[in-house]
View 1 (spheres, one colour):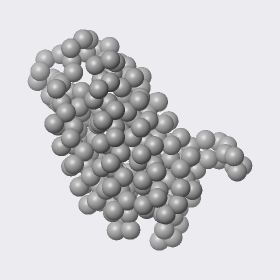
View 2 (cartoon, helix red, strand yellow):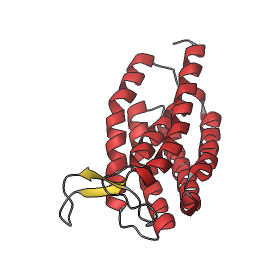
View 3 (cartoon, one colour):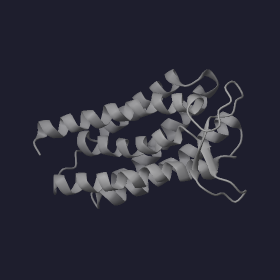
View 4 (cartoon, helix red, strand yellow):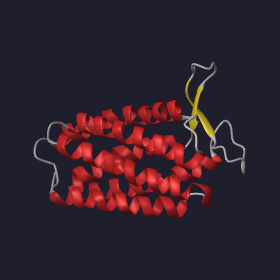
Length: 193
């Protein structure tokens, strides 16, 4: 793959990463099987057909986009390097704060920024050992950090923690075959620093 093609692909990952942020914030107030506008409770989606409490395991709907954002951030770093990845994290945090509903600005911005930094910290040393394992490990760390921080800061409760973790994990797992395809297609030596 040529340098220009890698940069173009990196830009596409960057733009998709940025699109995940407003979409997640919009979904949390508008998409779900259970939505009560103005209630302070996020719109919920089932992430498993069962839960320990009976019935489906539910999660705020924004988890779908945040799970994908964690993978896309890794791919931005893969194509454009560490500096671009750090810039994407800062830009994403600013965008998250700008598009979040007023009651979620602090929670959204803080959780996004810190969880993406955690993802970065895990992905960076692992990426040369293998793209898929680096994406999986860093995404798991990032999704747990994001889930804990967002729920605590936004709602003062960890009530949806299991659902958040499961929902984001589903999205990461669904993305892994694509990540493997990218790794196979690019061959050796395609890591940007």
